[in-house]
Length: 183
Image (cartoon, rainbow, N blue to C red):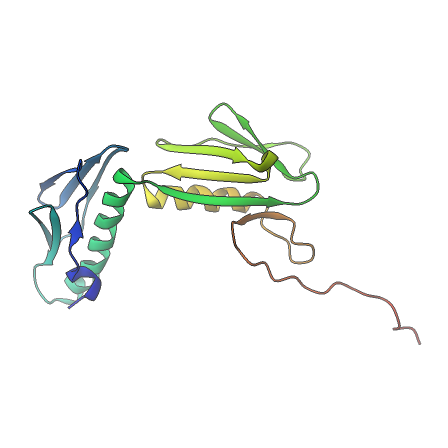
């Protein structure tokens, strides 16, 4: 049995859950998320606790049991607390500017790169344009937006310049020294 799938999901106060077969909707103070789960799992709510059960011990049902529980727990956390990803911009002259709801990334190209947020995603620029915070209620979307922003200018291996996650370690390579190698 899946160790993750067996764990109950506690519901914070102020959340409402609607279960309609394989479709589950969670509504909270930050918004509403709806997801249709794969066949083979069923959901139940009892006394402020959500439980995920699988229909049988078939391989496919065992495979989606823990996944479904994790996705449902992320939905509950998203509508109650939200998710955050922080990106640091490293490099001389590299920065981000807010432009309404969008972010302009000035990272060494001849033009700024505009990143428009999808629905329910907000950007905050801090530390004089050196830090961008991506916030939202859907963990998958927040992570994907952060990945897309990092892909604009990933950290290069010699000086470490570029866009990286906060706390990310970028291993630097030793460059050419060129000294003491003659004849």
